[in-house]
Length: 422
Image 1 (cartoon, helix red, strand yellow):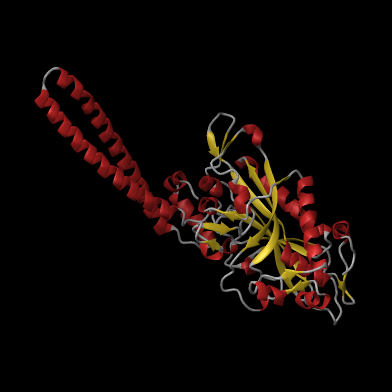
Image 2 (image 1 turned 180 degrees about the vertical axis):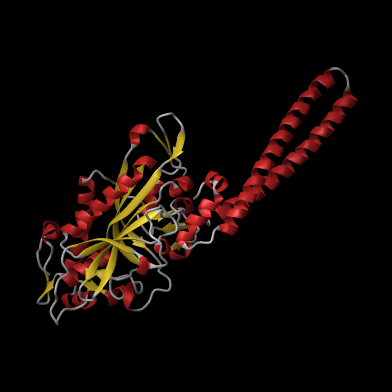
């Protein structure tokens, strides 16, 4: 959430920068500043009214003691009128602030200066590639056919149990899932990230804190009776651990990692892009989250990108890193780097990770602050990244590592799988 100070001090800057995300903010920013001006005027008027009310009310006792009952009664009537005025001002203030708050959450985060111009994913910038794309023979199969042939993932059984997008992993397929989760967590904890195991259902305040609500409620599974949401990513519960927290100088950096199943409705998804593991409603993911002082957050972002690249490189799968353009940037992100693996049998790139800096946008919603060296309270910066999301990693691994109808397991995973071939 953008701060009122920024919107008040430099509205044209906000409008210009949000245009990079192809978001026309002028009307909303203008209305917010009108409501903010009203807010301050109403508060000044209310404070003056309450001060007068208290000052005049203090006279009543003295007048009664002096036997000046008529004057005391007149003062009481004046106090009563001031109370009605105060009540009216409070109601106007609450209504004004409610409208103000409903508008400010509609503004996305401002992209940083490193974000390139562009409308959609076609305009994202490739900043790095790694590992060679394998040359597969004419008998190479896409992962959904390999999984069926080797009996390691059952898509039809998932449809029977739940619906499309909920596969069942079997035998070595299930073992591969568990191996990847443990491998990713071990790499993260060795890099200093504290492992946490959060709930996979969160309340509305948590969804608001990281920006999923009210922007993405249509993409989240909602348990209506209890008003809980199934997590779309571990970012939500893990970052919210620090909601309403004031950190000290010695608390930085905060580094956490977590594995959770993730749930996304993915409304409107169809076609070849959703075949097999390409797009699921339930999937496993390991996440890394960092909380930093503002002056350190971009160095932390570079560290996180390098960390995720190290994991991807170790798998031996062909990858590329992209810096997202303004039109492809998420609502809450100031800058995002996407990681993609090349799916050799499908002949396309599959996104497997996003690493983002949200600057103070989430922290403002979370009321996540810290005391600086001068003792002043400031907003922290939050960052997160997938390390990694499993479905498309598995898809690329099955396709790129196939040989003569078998899957050769990457060497780094063999201590975790207990086998080197499927």
